[in-house]
Image 1: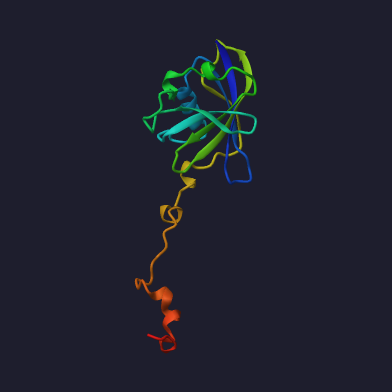
Image 2: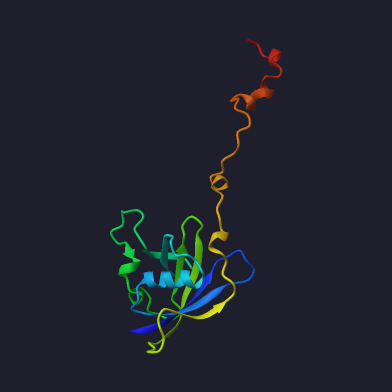
Length: 173
């Protein structure tokens, strides 16, 4: 097997980028990579997540998930049962990693090096950290705003038509 070094960039609204380089045994499964990414960015790792095979434009391809949320997919690929080298085998290959489908933390993952396994390294290993990772809870969603619920101040269903009836004498009945 080989050592895969992935560069993982977190998509944030911050001006400063934050990324991590993580080396992992290519025979490790995607769940181990998921755990390494969340730990490297200081996230708890207790949310649903998925990897997506991607192309040069970062489009989502085949999903590799923690669990099949639909229960309808015969070709579902599970993280714990899939070795990384079975889906990733080329330098510069890209993946999207989505963590917590409510807050939608998105990570851009690229295979930047393929090396021989080292007998002195303990995998997975964070090889490089650049930038400060955002707090996992800094991206809260206001459910009321996201559902576009408006406060109803006026419960009168005819209030929108008040102007129409101001001159009721103008109508012939």
